[in-house]
Length: 160
Image 1 (cartoon, rainbow, N blue to C red):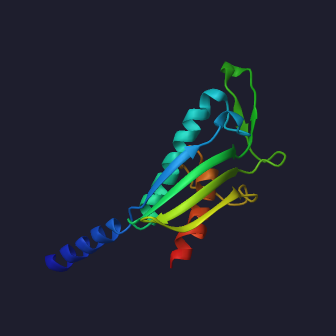
Image 2: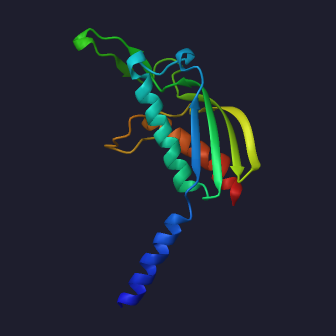
Image 3: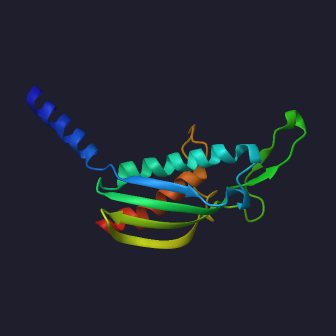
């Protein structure tokens, strides 16, 4: 009984290693972005987005593939509403056209060969109509879901 379990564990481990693509994320002229929250928050937003994209590449791209992304604009879900309480701003969802949008350029390579490249605006106009994970700890849950769906559509589904 132990042998089948050991073989299954080894197979699952190898399957996990089959994906380990890389991504390089550049933020071009971030001081001109439409919305990254309060200026003090811009670095945290960039760090969170870079982490989301690195995880997607590592989990979903083959090891021989690399992705280069240049983020040219960010407009986070919701709008900042200034408050007077403790000098903290609050992000309000559902008012005006406030869905998440990220403008970017990308190049997907396999070794030195370019597999795909382009420029587009990734957005999710229906971001409030679908739930995010309850109790999720993600800093940018709407943007994470949007980028995950875009990543699969653009890079993963086309590879199969």
